[in-house]
Length: 426
Image (tube, rainbow, N blue to C red):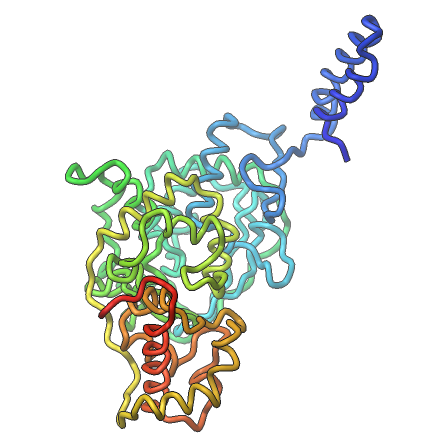
């Protein structure tokens, strides 16, 4: 179907030799979009591309400027709000909640944040919304569980949060009651969150403060990673109370049976800023596989909408971070030779790794150079624990941890012998 602009151009060209008729048609078609907008108050979203799941906006009901709404939409995408507040797996309406989030303390369900006045946030004041987002306190005074990353969102300014609300005020209202939370005893008592907040939520830290010792790009990246993007929640190993361990900041962790890689200067050592940005622009890992697991939603609903300069700023910040690598959780008792590793690889691993089935990394010099930046011990752990589509031990339940280690060593050795460029020494 032609757009209004294309349609207008076709008609003007068709009647270009009839001046009076051309003028009449031009005026009519120029006014048509305005008349159409008056009659149909739902208009396209401001940033999202045509293949996204973001809804059209009801700008006729807007109480804020288009510029504020657009800025709020960008910040909302930076914070990946859509992924958590939309039950995509069950074809749920945008921002209507219902997504089940499993934790070690029980199951949580994301709430409805559409402007519905009964089941959403349509009756919330600006002050209530700001307090919820930046302090984790609901309008009724109860505490939100920190799965809602208010302790990261606290780095956004009050105006940032109000801009987000300006956007949410014009998404379609959906009447959908919130699902009851299903936390284990005693965590089902929300008042117990007070203890967690006193231990881990620094009330005084507040809004992000520029570090004058770093560039504006670095500071922008820090604001996104430490604040709205809340990257540490997945890429940092958590303690027993679900809090990222500072010494392992962004140094990798397992989330929902997927490995969220080390994204510090060590983990990204082989990649320049452009290569890091291209992961989200092209939806492709440096190992040539597409993003999967929880990161798939983050990329599709969030990071791909960020301006390239913001993605480069993220890379600039990440590549400045130095952290310890967390210890592995697997025990490798007996060591085996490369010959033993070759046998296991040929019998159990080659089927996927020689064909890159389900994103399995091939025996390629550059690919394994990038993988080794995660640490050889971490590669052993991933092979033994599994990673998303790759089951634990590659599906070889009878294989010992030592034999899996030997198979990984064999693949690294073979990659070093391959003709592609870029093999590192560890």
